[in-house]
Amino acid sequence: MRSEVIEHNLGLSRRIHTSLAELPTTVLRQSQWKFLRIGLVAMDILMISVGFMLAYLVRFNMDIPFFYPHADNVMLGFYSVVAALLLPVWILTFRLYGLYAVKENLSRRHICAKLFNATTIPMFVVIVVDFFLPRFVIARGWLLLMWVFVYGFAVFGRFLMRRLVRHLRTKGYFLVPAIIVGANEESKLLAGQFLDERVSGLLLCGFISDEVASGTQVMEHLRVLGSLSNLEHLVQEMKAEEVIVTSSAVSSQDVLTLFKLYGVSNEVTLRLSSGLYEIITTGLQIQEFASVPLVKVSEFRLSGIDHFLKFALDYCFSIAAMLVVIPLCIVVGILIKLDSKGPVFHRRRVMGVKGKEFDAFKFRTMVVNGDEVLAAYPELKKKLDEEHKLKDDPRVTRMGRIIRKLSLDEFPQFFNVLRGEMSVVGPRMISPCEMQEYRKNGMNLLTVRPGITGLWQVSGRSDVTYQERVQMDMYYIRNWSVWMDINLIVKTIPALISRRGAY
Image (tube, rainbow, N blue to C red):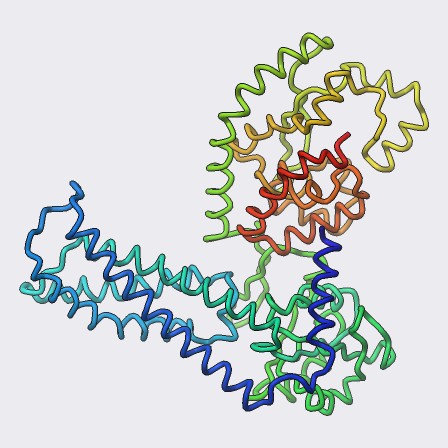
């Protein structure tokens, strides 16, 4: 699946990158951002108004026992006035929180937290006014519902606008031409993340490097445009508005030179990578100690609203799955006991978050003396050590082959999810001895919980090479979203039915 994603991204790059001359003019590009800002304001006004009205209908027109009864329908005029007064306060608060800085706030990340804070401030304004003006009486139920609905509809409105912008980007709108300074491994990884213009909003023009010769093809359709000495000319020629510096590819003197050129420029935005992207997938924060800016590495890949969404998806799905898992455990357990001697469940020792080891549950599909059986097949043992899998494994029981073919062996891992050790969707679990196979990427696996399913599950499972699995795991960790999890859960069902790679 990762290769399909990359091919799709390159396809977008080929389609839009065919001619930079086809980009809208500078004036038109500036105008389209103004129109987008106006569109965001209009969408927020609409969503806030809907939130106001829905809060009123629920509070005063629905017989909910929790609220005190109100029969005075004349109050609609009063609450309409309050809503009209609050609306500009809300829009101003959104503005102060930078929610109309369109180039910075089209990404889904952190937008929910910003909207939450921005929708809460006007609530306190009403509470303060209500406290100091005794005659200004506001129903607390309406105030609470208004806050909930306005936040929910504001998030939904931003989602709609983001989908619209992503569509228009495929037509060449709302794209920012960008140049990457550096052409090393980290530069290529950064470029790989930016290739999907629908998400990044960047139209990559190419690389700048003093180490790699001009014209060298670094990635498909992306080459070295020239050296740092030609940067100013190339920025003008490519109409670049973003210069992204790969910190690990340039010297501190080069960074100083670039800062002098574009550090305070109104036309070009200068951005510096952390220099750790090639190695670390967790979030990085800039914090000042004694006026010194330092990079703080987060312990976990997900935090805040992302962590909550992941938690909610895992537990809601797992609790629902228990309706199938528990009866299945009883039936399959009986069949396993009838087929061969040994326990029903196999406990596999694997790596969890922050390196904490735990036992992942699986239905037992092998004989209990598996090591002795495998010792009789030295060529298979060697292959297992190299690839960590065997297609024709002599240790597998008759019932075990059926369980594997039907992809039932990992169903007991929903208990691991409920214990907080695993996720429904995540990277493939690995044993402690496999950590060396991931090399420098191994530490990234310890920032998220392993999953019952994932990219590897919908991409061929055991037919996928070990190195491809590593790449898929890194892609998943770097690009996680709740929508990706939902999409992978949906795609897992036909993957299980097809039984591709199940052995």
